[in-house]
Amino acid sequence: MKELNGGKQMKDVWNGALTPKNEKLYGKHPTQKPLYVLERIILASTREGDTILDPFCGSSTTGVACKKLGRNYIGIDHEREYIDLSVRRLQNSWHEGNLLNGLQLSDAQ
Image (cartoon, rainbow, N blue to C red; front, side):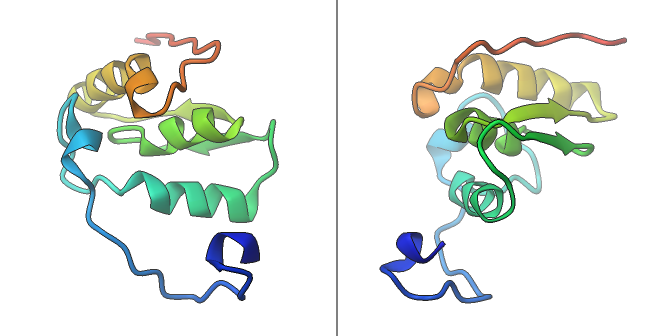
């Protein structure tokens, strides 16, 4: 993680911008996190090829970060509105960094 912080130890408080509009192109979620936050968390706690479960996926920022960083992703949400938002966002994640690499979505109703 030092390489992400100019060679210095990463601090426990991260400063950064709010979620930008381009990350909300396919809909909005009231607690959507900025992509860079999930990228840092995933880089700090997983390895490429790992599978990450997000049982409250909301807008699937975790899923977009997983695809970008070479992780597998399982997202679950109770609200159909947010599942639909997640599907739109993941299908179009190409626009958030050319991320659509073998993405498979299933609708388990």
